[in-house]
Amino acid sequence: SSAGAPVPAVAIKHSFEVKDVSWHAAGDYFSSVCPKGNTKAVLVHQLSKGHSQNPFRKNKGIVARAMFHPTKPFFFVATQQAVRVYNLAKQSLAKKLVSGSGVITSMSIHPSGDHVVLGGEDKRVCWFDLDLSVKPYKALRYHDAAVRGVAFHQTYPLFASASDDGTAHVFHGKVFSDLMTNPMIVPVKILKGHTKSKSGEGVCEVVFHPSQPWAFTGGADGNVHLYCNP
Image (cartoon, rainbow, N blue to C red; front, top):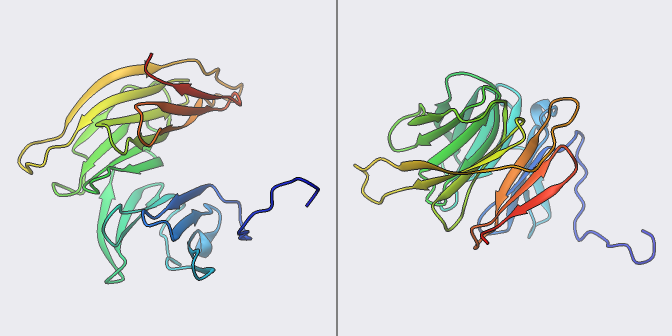
């Protein structure tokens, strides 16, 4: 590298373009997704051993996202049509989540691990209660174009969605410890400011600050915005 340029501690060469990276909560494992990778679409990497493995050679569709359960040995693989939840301890399929329509573009897992939200090209955000059903508990239709990113906050009862309509929507999403009480979902704020590209792309991603009620959005206009409380 050139003088003064940062040198990566670890460099992993993939055979295909990487579109998604997700960390395990313990910090030693992370996954990478190459949608065009066919049998090498999802790889799991372990830092301590410097080892990569390919546990899912048959993904049954183009993989969009992959994420670890925050506390249990489950791994979520979202293809364009469904989410397969694998039990890593038993090396078996635990359940399959089906959104019903549209191509899945994005996924986020609630910090409790009991709820999942999916974004899709059909403009919907689908909330799943994993203890209730493999079908959506609620489908939210607030965007005017494809949803490209979804995110749960790790400490506040908030979640958000980003869309090609040029906006990101923030929702209050409270989960109750009483399993008989359904989650409470209320729209809170529409975040604007990004300019849509000529190809029709808008806000590509949304993520929350780990401890503050702040949201970061990345747009096709090349800008990253931070929205925070005044």
